[in-house]
Amino acid sequence: MVGAASSRYGKLAETAREAATKVALDAILDAGLEPRQVDHTFVANCFGLTEHQGHLGPLVNNGLGIPATPSMTIESACSSSSAALHEAFVHVAGGFADVALVVGAERLSHLDTMTATGYFAFGADYPFETRNGATFPSLYATLAGAYRDAYHASPEMFGAVAIKNHANAARNPKAHLQKEITLRTYLDSPLVAAPLRLYDCCPFSDGAAALVVAAREVVARPTREPLVVRASVRAGAVTALQDRPDLLGLPSSRLAGDKAFRQAKLERTDIDFLEVHDCFTIAEVLALEDLGFFPRGSAAREALEGTTARDGRLPVNPSGGLKAKGHPVAATGAGQVVEIFDQFNGRAPGREVPRAEVALAHNVGATGGSCSVHIFGRR
Amino acid sequence: MSSPPPVPHSIGEFVQGYEGARTLRAFRCPSCGKVAATWGLACSGCGHRPLEETTLGPRGRIVAGTIVAVAADEFVNDAPYAYVLVELEGGGQVSGWMPNVRSEAEIAPGTRVRFTSSYKPGLQFELDPEGGPDTPVASP
Image 1 (tube, each protein chain N blue to C red):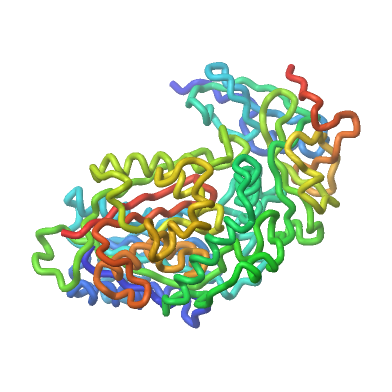
Image 2 (cartoon, one colour):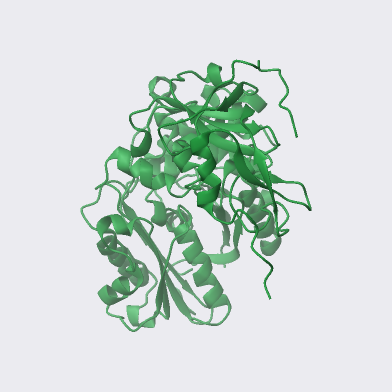
């Protein structure tokens, strides 16, 4: 990976199409390349139809002046742009492209909370979950309640995840919620779906992020410190929570994580920091256990004890995560990798993870019907 | 030649049962025994096909749940309400909603519930006055 760029997350004036095209050009120029060198474009976008615009792939290419370049538009709920990254990696690693462009973009701020809540729930099983009253927060709240009951997790433990990620986002000038919060603020915030409070939940964000993947021999002298893709893995699982054998993890995270470490030939102890999918605080807790970094029932306590803080033993979400950096759905996975690229290139002042050599990105589609895990190292 | 489709073979046939609030149509896997009230052509547990038809409900017990305060448009006039996962008579799990429930204590795991007729298309439950939390759910 030789170039990366991201918009600010939050409320943007641009459409998803405009934001996608701008960050795509930024990422290509960041790599020291020109758009004409892109062999294939992979665009992720979930809610374009709410902007009366689908089929973003060729429109991004049109805006970049490369209308003849092939493209595809990918939807995999919140894991859309990590799915796009996986497809780009497969194309480059398989020799079908020398340079592949990955773009994720989303605009949500034109939707009111009720409407956005409805659209987010379309990533669940509509006739068997959503129509029965499920919202996206309610599904993760069901997981959070089961976790709390099984492991006696306290509100303070979930709150510690939120407080940590807000502290990191306060040092990220592109984050949606650049503010620290206290435990009191967390505990006083209203319930969205018990036991999840407002500050357990990520915001609806606009945003765009782009990555350039290139074959090693094509970019002999990269302009930036490249990320070597050590693992690129996707996994799936039965979508409806009621059809799963237990509620204490996401099966697709376990599958993708185990396979990624086998593919990378690395151990958990080799990872210096992680960007994991924390659409809700419980999601970060489950991710760290599903990926094998902490035993079952212990990750929430580790957050409270500071293990996952930026200066802790295992920094998690130094960007601020979905929780506070923001969650522009189809841009989120690519945005996680932009953070890793920026960390490796000294472009994350104030929130740098020192001496990082290997990092992991974990991106979940809805409640885990799909999941991506990527592991990156230095050359 | 492909094998004949299993019955029922449409999502619509599955959710028709919601309106009568009597029993639900579901699948039982003859290979691994998994029972699912979600639609499919093969077992989501082991991949076996075809599946056998079975019925579930109308009684069950809550496995997990939440109180939804911020609802989507289809339920906005019902919030707060409970969203619950329920293990039904017959062994399968479904999700459903319960109006006029405002605390997690009312939907503690093990609480007995039953289908009730609803003015909405989704599957609605109510507390089952005939069973306490410790009453086992009958299997067929």
